Length: 407
Image (cartoon, rainbow, N blue to C red; front, side, top):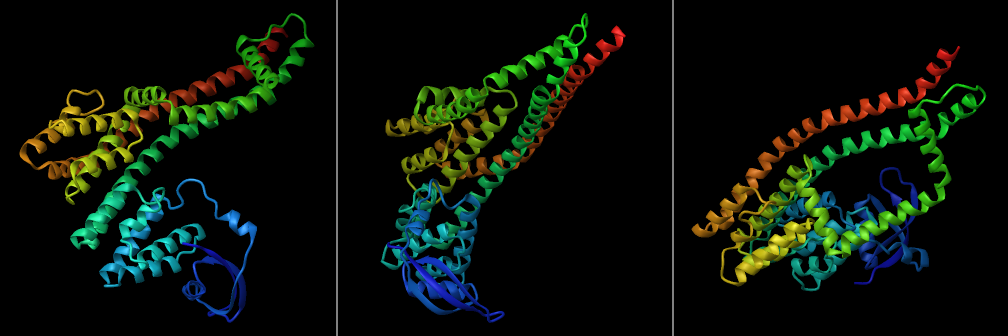
């Protein structure tokens, strides 16, 4: 689909004021609908070509965030339940969207659907913004004639995953802020305050500088002497780290292993990954998606290399005619409850329902585990902060005490 730039003049309905602007759309008619959605009455609309506008269309990564995706799906679900046809619902959602980058994608969805493609096929054109699980679930819903039910189910899945990730992020953000502030204050003292003690001690003979103060001063001098190296080196290390994490499998496995074995963090890592495996597989199996396709989609939702390897092993087991659950049994990254419930589900032919029970269990258990994590982090943070404050106070006060004793 080709997107054009259009300049427009329109009258604002609430006060009659004439406004001007530029917007993107596949046609002039779509611009008119967009302006009406914004309570603007079109006066003049004409196509406008601009290099800057073309450059503005370049985006990196996903355009539609998880939160915006959930909101979009809820709107689509409401329109479909109100008996609005799919192509009309797609047009409405595109024209009322104010974010130009998201609107561009929704125009594309409308265009594909209006051209005869299924909604799943339209979503598949934008893999960065519409996850594979959404494409698969919508595809099944369209094939079975229950698109409304499929969208309702996937909304529940996305909301549960979004809540879990948001809780984990908020929990982990607190220690990062404390640590960042602590090191920031330490850097200020080393670079701005403590160098003043050097001239003070140099002016008086026979007074020895306290070791802790000398340590901070020497560290500050070292930072200043290598400042350019640090400015260049730290970003390079970050880039190298991200590249290795993305391309170098042994490094991915090492980081994943650390996350699973690290005290405190390990519990959250297991919770996040096992919950995602149970939720994704249950959603897809209960909507009659074949097991191999369900496992392939689940693989794409995981970021931890060790759990991805477990899914690969589960796929190999299924191909060999064995139980998928054998991949999870007696593995250090898998809870005993998870492995046994998956095994029971396979042997009783109720794998989808058993995984749904597991998913519900993890949803309920996540609040308890995250609250426990917060309580475990608090004393560690308090010890860190008090220790840092004590050390910095000693580094600042001991020089004064040394001079007082000499006097």
